[in-house]
Amino acid sequence: DNDEDYCRSVHKVPQEISGESDDPDVTTTPLVPDMSDPEHFARNYLPLEVRRALAKGKKVGGRLCLKVWTLPKGVRIPVSLNTSGLPVGENAIMLINFLGALARDAVLAPLTYVSWKTFPKENKDVMWHIVKLKFDVDRPHELSVLRSIRNKWRVWKSYLKRKHYDSHTTEEERLADRDPRVTKEQWRVLVAYWNTEKAKARSAASKASRAKSTYINKTGSKSFARMRQEESRSGDPSLESPEGSGDGYAPAIGANRRVSARRHTPGPSPKDLQERSDTQAARAKRKAGDEVSTLRNKVVVTEESRPKNSQESAVLESARDKRRAEDEAAALRKKVIAMEESQRKLQEDLARVTNAMSAMQKMMATDGLPNRNG
Image (cartoon, rainbow, N blue to C red; front, side):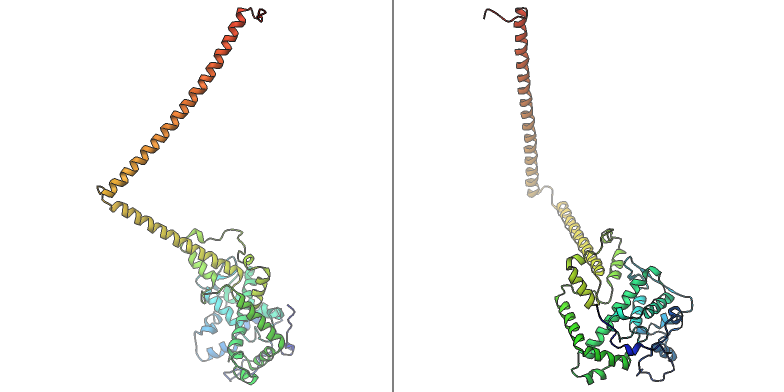
């Protein structure tokens, strides 16, 4: 991927961010703050929208995640992550929503970058430190957390393009239809980039890739990891992932297809798809087992409810007796054949012994010498 930062002037000089704006709709881009000390910045950062909401007396804030941002110092929300680094369990949705809020933050995750690869490392470090301050997440999960933010950032840009850019035909209309969560400067830069031939070519390639996709996600907002974790609570051992199973979905779609799909679509990863496939297979297996048990119960009930002295029972009993007699006769025939074979071998052995004894008697009659008169 040779994409470069297409608006370097926006990111040149680190400057202080002022939170003293009375305008409820930010009309200028948040100037890039000094993130040279990511941990220090993370401890003191509070989004402008959150500050405004708190100033209005709000205690909860949906997409703003006010509860998370206003946690007392030193208090962290416990959250569980599975072996793939995906949040599961009771507080999973809180972490997922918070990562989405970070991905939409104009200061932490500016929209003026073509790809995640061009993001400054300082920005990524700050977001990771913020997550660690709010949630009880271990260091080994840093890559998974940042990957989730990356995917949500891509989804955010895709949403803006579909909702506020593709729905119009002129640049004036597009610039005017700005989502209030996006600064004017970042939106202007983003629209200018989407107008370029390079961006149009990338968009066409993405649409073609999605059109070829054979997988459709119908799970809604709930992640594959959370669905699998909830299913596994039933205690069904068939839902446990076999060790070393790896990425079972990737080989099926092919290496080139996999790279293309992950580059252009922010959907579930191949590992997520594999987990979903395993869950569906386990459900089908459990359903089939239930159906078999139901059929067996019906057969037992039918057998027990049938009258013993009915004509049908007599016919069945007669058939069973006949089959039993035939089996016994066949077994007896096998025994007779075996005895005849044994008797034949015994007669052959007896004949050989008789011939040998006769020969010995002749030799003894001639003192062991051959008969010369013959």
